Image (cartoon, rainbow, N blue to C red; front, side, top):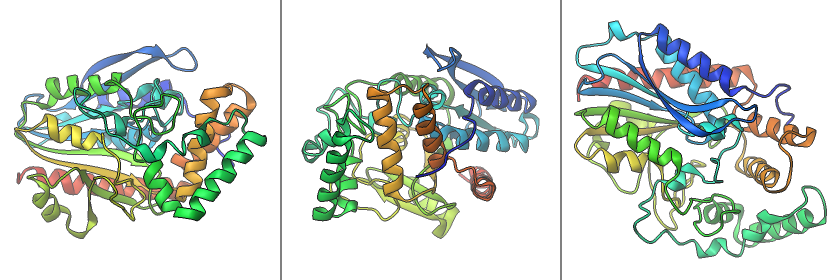
Length: 367
């Protein structure tokens, strides 16, 4: 198992770094306070920094922390981008919008999910309609409910998981589980039964900061899937959208297009069977903008290892104590899984992320 970090990250420290970078860059900052506190009793919030005229018709948008623990990579990417861009040096009619840690509770508590055990990239669905069904998950649900971490119940659950993987293959099991489910609040990859705080907050941010724009390039930042150290540029949507061809022209073969749907497979490590992606939510709620909606997914460890880490963290918040030595060990391993302490990994993903940002930003003027 992974060794994990000797010292866990601090939400307030990371937030202060972002706010300082935004202030130095001449940004206007809006705070969206979260109703809950962090593990140290600290205030939580999603912060939006706008560099340039907020009424600009061309916007460059970056979202971090959709999956909370992944937000430390995303936050660093936003900080680095603001270090080389200033409100006073942007092209005319162009603004940068940095949406910092849209899942602040998950970032602070080092969870992939939010305060309600919701995976936000399963939560951006239309709750006025029947929720997506995932009947095949039902036979696997009990695997994630064993009350011990290393005892007989976990051993039996592991045996059942191994049996299912041998029968159908790990890739098939992954497709079923990671597709998301909307029945079990104590289950894994739970999409929720209503719009989360982050869902509602992102909608406010869209209406307040983005809805007026005519041309937008937007990035949602993630880690955990794909080849180690490779920041994969993706377009994820339920169907081809109007600006997709322009995205292909801008990024060429760097761009991987993932059209999601039932029973669809993917060799990227990102689940194609899931619904409720933030990317689709952005497309649905900005219908009048010429929107190129993209994802950067930075690969870390193999899929089975990552699933094991998420599963241990799921157990911890069902039955364990996150503040205990055991809890901190699990948190350290999870953080390592989503943000490797390998300095080469960190430098490489930031270099590539900034390259992608630069190409996208240069193309914004042509939209």
